[in-house]
Length: 458
Image (tube, rainbow, N blue to C red; front, top):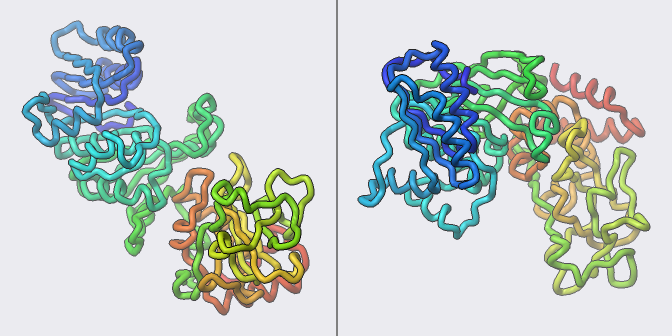
């Protein structure tokens, strides 16, 4: 992280928010003391709330204070509240001068919508759902023009509706210079039980956006470091209203980007995608382990596999059925063909997107179906799809190229309906042809699916 900063001159004002014992500041200062920067003077503002770490932090920073050109301000206070007061110009808060540099490993924790932190952040135009994105937004807000911010953060901010205001905030005030992706979710941060990939990002306040350097490594040894440069329109697509941040891991465009046949939105196809509406714990009294009189099928990810749909499953930990009554009716869909995608993948699963076609014949003569909240559901105005279209969608979504493209903006175990909504698809006619082809093949291998996609992209 310290090596990502460009060489600087003049005075340096360094922010380390959530400093811990000062490891990041130490890396930055080591580079300075060994001649890596040309600063005449460095001032560090190190924020750390944990009283147990303050002595260690002071000891770390004291090592650099021996020639009169270094000042360390250890601030044992809430960084968010202090930064907001400073940005507002509070009479009771010491003004925080604009920082030339910030190096961050911020805390990772959700912020409740009515918490003091959330309300304070709103006062300075920051709307975000996690402490880590709040810290980065505040670092950008407090940076001087040309200020450099390097942060190691989870990759969840790259996509999804909850982080859209945060993406807008930083992209309006800063440019992206460098992103480093740790491709394993289990190696770089194995002690932290991290469920998503982590990224190191370098932002520059008020810069002119140019190409972005993207580096990747499997883990924190950096033994297999790979470096590429990409035009910014491969990082944030110009026509994307959500401003998803993509992290391409190869210089070549993949099959989805290159194909003229894959340019349709779901709106073009007349299809919608929704999160499964049955939230089981809210409808607990209506759930049944096995089907019986007055019940209809309730479908979970466990009912779907590469070989098709299996229902009911005896001994499954989840219920197989839900009562159909006045309390549940509005959550149920008419029986028919649908395409479903699991919302969560396991940590190191081969594919992030796992799609299946729902076959109504599996359930016998039932009028409606329940889809549990851990599934995403493709439908036409809350009704089923033509069989060939449902099967064609499942085949397309299960291709390696779709998965590779999806991983460029999604680095965690969750596949949201918004993510699926913003992807590009083949035309309705092409998907129907794909489904008709699949219906003639029997069980398909990954090689067959990928080869068939190749015929669409020529």
